[in-house]
Every structure is written in C-alpha cells, then in structure tokens.
Image (cartoon, rainbow, N blue to C red; front, top):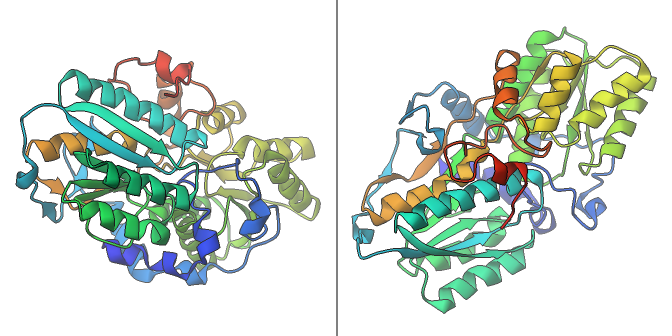
Length: 406
C-alpha cells in the first residue's frame, strides 16, 4: 500500500515537492507565487495526481474496523502487516530519541508539536525516554537532510522519528537512517521506501476528498456551483484531496472551479467576492481550514445566503460554523497523530509488534457533533485543532490554551 500511495508524488517537480509544508496550511512561505500561482489563478486539472487504486483503497479504509480502544484513537490502527521489533527490546533505561521535524510553521503543526512534547513528558517520567533531541528544518528539504545526517554522524540516537518535509527528496536520508540499524519511525508524510520500522499517518488525502465532496454533492443539486479553495500545488496530500473531490463533483454534475490561495485570507475573500459578482455560488470546498472564516465573511459582505461548506476541525471554522448556522462539515487530518510516534517508540523498545503501516482513524466532525467539540475545546485559541487528542496529558488545557511551544 505504501508504494501505491506515493505514485502521485513522483510526477511533481522537485521545486513543487520542496513546498510540501504540512497536511494543513503554511502561510509563511517567502515566495508562494513560485509554486505556480497560488495567489489566485484557476488551477489546471488534477488528473495527473489521481490513482484509482489509492482512491479505492482509502474509500474502503473509511469504513474499516480499527484495532484498539476507541477512546485512544492515536493508538488505533487498521489490521495489516506487523513489524517484529524484538531485536530492539531493551529494558536498560531511558533511550534518546532524535526527531527530524519538517517545521512548526503553521497552526496544525504547532498544535501537534505541543501535544507531542506533553506526551514526551509522560515517557520521560516513566523512564522510557531520556531525552528527545529535535531539529526543525523550517520547511526546507536540504536543511532536513542535513539534520538527519547530523543525527547519524552524532551516533548516539537510540531511535529516529522523522516527519518528512517532502517525499522524494527525503527518501535517501531516511534510508541512511535505516542503515544505522536503529528503529526509524516516519509519520505524517511518507517517503519512497519501506525501510522504516513503522509509517504512521491518518487514512489520507483521498479520504478527505471523498468525505467532503460526497457531503457537498448530497446537499447540492446538479448544476450547482462550488468554489474550491486550495492552498498550494504540488503537495501530495493536498493534491489527492482535490483529485478525489474533483472526480466526485464531475460524477454528480456539480460545477466546480478551483483556485490556489496561498492561505491568504484577503485573497480568499477576493476570490469569493469575484465569483459572487459573476453569479450564484452554492458551495465552498477547502483542502484545509485556514481562511474559512474569510470565505464565509465574503458571503456576508455580499448579502447572500451562506453556502454549503467544508472547512476543517480548526476552532476558527467550528466557531464561525456555529455562529452562522450554515450547512457544514469539518474534515480532519487527525492531529492526534503527533502522539503516536513516541508511543510507537515505547512499544518498539518493549519489543512489541507495531504496524508496518500504522493507519490512524480520520473521521470528520458533523453538525451533530460540533457542539460537543466546541464545549470540549472551550478556551482554546482559534488556531487550535479540535481533534488534537491531548486531553489526558499533563498541562491540559493550559499548555494548549497558552500555545506553549517548546
């Protein structure tokens, strides 16, 4: 399965892959226009990114039975091949973990980073982990490659955790980490090798696209118009979100026009305003929730009915959704996955099997669940993600409320 999910990545240019910033958005890029006009032009077709086998597989996984306790979704997984980790079993004391992180340059990654560090605190107190040395690549492939090579040459890492900045560029560095003979945990984005001890991720971009496009199609009529607001081109998990959605819109006779926005609220508002000036817009689709409020405000400014809309589980969208009463859905790219790599390390050093590909649940928030998530996350900042999964960790809720970023 891992090799198939990466087919789309190899068609992107090296420059586009270097912009693979996160599974959410990143508005901090110095020159977003270099990515291929994320500043507002209508995009080209996503056919080159669509892989039918991956679409079918992720659609099946959306209805799969997950192993493990539903109250701990960060430990759940879809049954499949397991990795024997008995060779790493060691009860001699706390181990040093070396984490090569792509970045913490956007709210999704910041929320996860906070959660990861609170999980680290638990494992340090229990004696499983002595320390986690982290190097932040700040969204740069070459920096992250150097970071991984630094850890390798340093020679005192008991385990590697890697959240790759991009797929193809980081593959050789991940393979070099594997060649050390130490366990390697890859999460969030994949690479083009199966050498890691485990690869951790939610179901994926197709699942996002399927859930959101089906929701819009079911709540709209044939011939209705949807404006799709996309962040960046060349980002595999974002491209597959749109590839799946575009397929479903076409099958249901929904007129969908898509734009790259660079996650700029002003650009988002301009796009919607211009579309409304040219006619009715019945739906809005987003490949990430940043800027959702700006899109909604454009409808308010125009004095027209709210659209049927999909955003994300970021608190700003959930709150605006509640305030407006619009017909919406909040897809997720499960932020709680940031806990899982450290818990995987715990299992590995206990000699327990771990999934070779650790596929985590990815379940949208519906209107019927919205109030519960709003109540559970009361007091959290707008950039917080509702399904962060840190309620049982030390420092809750203050660390997340105060955005204490290590």
